[in-house]
Length: 421
Image (cartoon, rainbow, N blue to C red; front, side, top):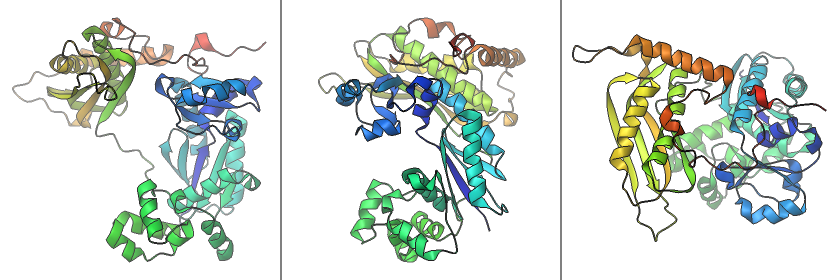
């Protein structure tokens, strides 16, 4: 029978910050979202102070100052690098691995005789090699593994590991009865409310519900969830991540931006990031979409929520060609006199680069461009993202998001290495 483990880095962003700041051991930490707007990560000590997740920072600023909370802006380069390291360590512990998010992955543990001991060793290895805390949940389905991970995380007496015991039906029912139905993977707020109206308030209630009746009311996805809660594996295991069919890069500005050069710098930045992701999966894009939005929260100002798509004569992954198309789209959307709050770029009509065949009426791409992009990526990999970039990206940096309390990029920048002393 299949056996799944869900390994999750505990309060991952906050743990990454603490890893390089041993002086913060035992102290409360919060990490803020883009433009330092909301609280997106909290250490256990911060949670104990009553700081909620996803609340605007200004609402808890006084509380943080009063209790000496360490506040950090999101350091995506650090978190991304530590995530990659954690996933490489975890890949050694499973028959197969499915990376689910920046801080969690599924592992197949089929055939492993002692799943509980194996899970404990996984957790210890991550702590030993990376210094990061993690929880491990194990079950016969991905949904049960997620639920087990929730128990491992919420109940300190479990030591960060929980494995569903197929032979102990009584304990299984007791634990499921203690979990709100909203704890089940795939049950969002609205579905939770609908299920509670039907008298299904706990994970146990959902596991013992009439699956065919639920399918008629809510669709086949919930029927599969019921089956998964009963140990029947229904969800595919994606050990090889599928290539993205579209790639979006966007960000809101800290302040409203009225001028075209600053908007062009932002569009160039987003296009370069999206193009790199495109090349990483060895794909090309046939269309470039550009979005340009004013501030929807300022009803007193003139509004525009624009979207324009530029088609390319031949699909490419070349940053220069994609940026040229994106800037063309921006010029068609831009209206002088408006102040914009958000812009972004989407690469569309994506396909594997190996499928591209020039026709008689389209010039073949210059092979030197591929060499140029390889050199660009190589330099940025070695010396840090943004070491080499297009000139239009440097016209203005006013659009860059506020990160007033960003920690050093300890693991990816040689000039920001941690120092001991």
